Image (tube, rainbow, N blue to C red; front, side, top):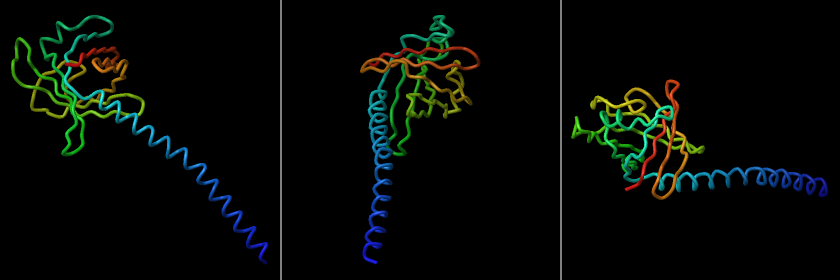
Length: 163
């Protein structure tokens, strides 16, 4: 009887150890992934100036400048812990206003951007209302953020320099 109980206790211990050995790496990966995402978020936050706006490899800053300004601001709203992007509309035709977006960052370094202030008209593809775009981060350094997306069959490249 004693040997049977000892054997049963050992088998339960082995099962528990197997569960721990299986679960522990999963938990560690999740923790490491969160730290990496937080570091990436911290690098993204800040004020930027648009340096490049290409559509299908063609410099498209001139048409962009007629619709939107070159000042971008990525920040986190501490009140609701949401990420925001503001593009200021300081163009030759419109010296006031802004358009605002919510954005999220996934584990694959893809930024999902969705406009939320529909009261401000205007914009230029892909920065307009009622669409969601997924931007691949190509380069993220202390002073530069390059990102690209495909929308309606066109390739968009944005190069931002941190102020």
